[in-house]
Image (cartoon, rainbow, N blue to C red):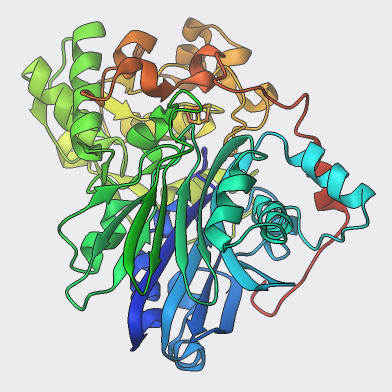
Length: 478
Ligand code: SF4
């Protein structure tokens, strides 16, 4: 659906002996597909020999049997799924980034966005460095390899490199003999790991990837923590912890993450249901049925219905088989939403409907969805949003890039309601959104896109976008 998007998901696997790490990586990435659908990649390490494959497309499209066979067996692997904010950048910025350096090689997959990207890049370029991408993974790899020249080990180089990285970064790194997982000190993006039945260690952006691989005991990697896996076992380094105030992205709970994931010990489903319960208390309305916009509005609708003591119903059917559509917005925007989502008139006809959704960005999708319900016979549609209005861009790895695209920056809530055609409209309050993932302390969340209180210095502009105009890689799947 049109809206906002997470930019990446990462995965890493370590095992002592050679085994089918590419297949395990493939399965884990399939579970992380919601975090990025434009491109994906896997790098496999067979005793120091790296094999890598990346391409534009879904994991199931890119990683076919031929590719997995070619990637072969290995003892370490890293994988990545990416949402490209700009079609022209998609291919050039595919990950994992693989770098050969003086002391070896590394493959790195990152989730996040550095706020000092431009400063780092200008510094490197002024010293003659060449860049092939516009992505953070390449810059992070450069900082690490620079520090590696004067460090006794790759993990020491990674720790030193963290001092130069600002903003949001969460990465997995594969060296010839080690797998290293890092969550930046602010902890914007989640990261966790666990041990599979065959003894492999698996690191992933979300726990749903680990449970897909049969792992039940999930350990969250804390903001600022580095976890290293090698032949001697698992090593934790906490020397970077506490250097920044934790600023977990609250929108991971509202929208980005999968509802069966548990992030930092809190179930995403439970957080969304709690958001719906708060919403019912803050914006009550007389109604006959509560429905949610699939997928991320469903859990909120269940919470709203429970708290308001109104029946919950399945008001929409989502087309599971459509995948990505390549219809140009404009006159076909309506059809592109319709083909993915269809109202169940038996549920909404002649009813006063509470419709729960996770966000309103431009308002165009909400307008179409409300229109569909009215056409299907709903008497009234009361739209409830499990987040406050978006008022500010995000600099930490999502595509909320400018105020221009945010309807709440241009219109009052009453104007938005009229444009969308809803009978009433209610957003979750800022106070409540910080409570949905209790017991995580309210002060440990970033909510800058709602309140403008950025937890780090921010760049003056999204200036790095200028690089996207310089290089276009066209591939066979484009
Ligand atoms: S600005 Fe919003 S979307 Fe970005 S990290 Fe903060 S809470 Fe998440």
